[in-house]
Image 1: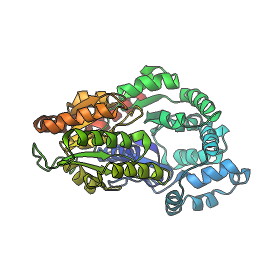
Image 2: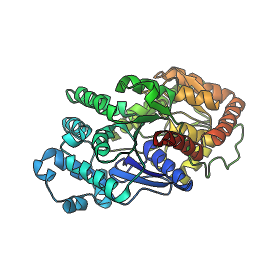
Image 3: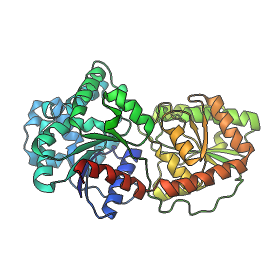
Image 4: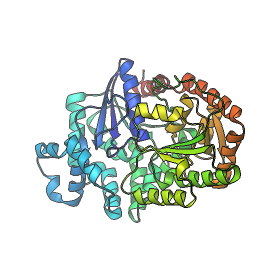
Length: 430
């Protein structure tokens, strides 16, 4: 099978979607299929071997310039290729902090319009390469912000076009009006051009069916899977000293670090700070630095500096080491998270989780048995959940081991690839 998988880069940071895309593509390649993992906007960054192709499409600089000026919609492709340099894109992404809300909204609508948008030239480049050079049997987009590509692709190539659903509603709901309403309308219209969708949780199937106004029958479930190499190798003890609560996710308000810090403070007030520690790791953007500074200020005001550690952004080996030094992991997202890759990574190493009872977390905790659920956006409830593990480390150990067994049995990258191939074969008529 020859697959084209079109994915977005994440401006130089590790992100769950990029990790998932690369892991899936690598697993499909190992199974003997041909896969072109095609980066767009910026290069893909992963903590495993990068299997993406070295050709960039919809480079972020070109996309932006074509939105701002008609001149760049007519420049030669050879000039565009220079602006698509991965080194240049990575360098600029590190320098930039945020995009003007109005520019972001109009750009989103334009890209969603596909061949009717200001980035028509970028779409033609992509379709020409797919049709003339790669010639895939099937195409999958890694998120529904690409559905505007489907009409032109299907016009030029008689092949199935599928689309993954990975949390796009959070981005869309953050747009300002009138762009938010316009983007949603265009998205719903263009979603009709896609043959089928793939989601990683039942929660997101039900949510996106209503959000996109497509029947649930068109959305297929493929559970997350991770590359288990290196995970779960270290032996754990039932009681760790100090009891260490961990957070592994991007540092931003929506991931809920402030809620975890508040819960940690409440826990220290109940039990005393001795023997308790909070360790945090994850990417911090310039945009979110003021948020993190406020979190740190609060920690200092509570006198908890000595019990807190920020490890920064960590690679794969550092991540596994980080997880193996935790007693429990908690990422109390404010929004309803459709994925939760960090839950699988923690459980793969025998680390139990305390997560909010929303989004994909109830499914993950129920299917793995690796943790407990608490009321969302409630630091007191989160502290209650964490306290259960502090007072009963044997229970935490047992849940962690149960979750580890489940993840290693059912949530591997091979299992994810097999489930994905089953859907691909359905659309190819095999």
